[in-house]
Image (cartoon, rainbow, N blue to C red; front, side):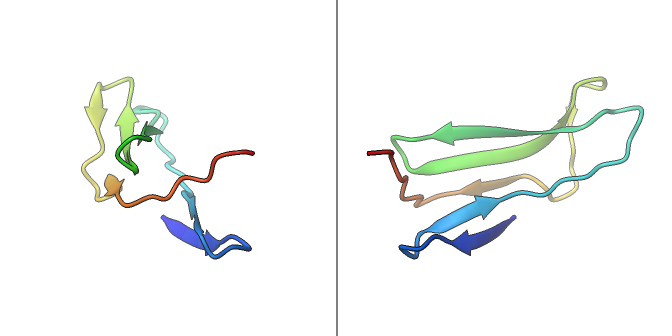
Length: 69
């Protein structure tokens, strides 16, 4: 995960993921919790029904959401 600042200084969260795995077909999932200012992300393999245990899962807290005007 990486962040870049917006013009107002608030962070933009970015995820770059590339798994080459023809058997597990992994996908990054993202769960957003707006009321608590947090999100959680992890890599899931639908074909095996398992979550990757490679350190790619993370929870980000204290997010200051930017809502459209």
